[in-house]
Image (cartoon, rainbow, N blue to C red; front, side, top):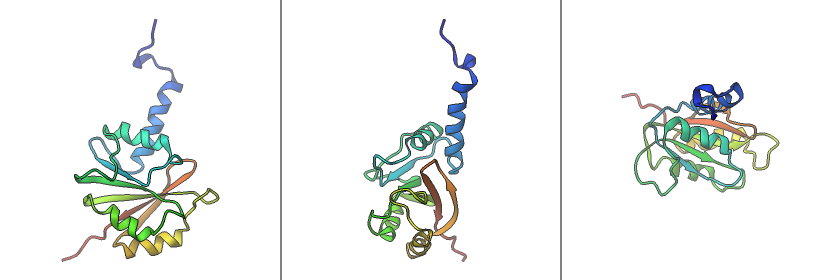
Length: 150
């Protein structure tokens, strides 16, 4: 007899809950559209799956031509000019949207120094609001456009 979802053991139920927690820490919710830039084989596939599961949408790439709620920018030290990449990330982002700059953690190949992020973000018109661990190898820095006071 096969087990149904209601009969799943704790080890089976824990994985989806852990995935949802990872994606919800990014402030994502069902129905949102997330654009992914800088994808490569070293990206955190569990995080990508968690995001698709939580939002109910596959991640879209740089060819997506409609507005997105969040941009995931995978960035490594040798990927080029971070300011240019951040400016490009704003192209499809909705007003009030968020960019998550995902960089390898300290000690991992491609680690980006926090000072580099701190210099690039304001040059691109963004503010860093928080940094979190998004997996065993990656950290995420939340970047937003400052609110204009009129």
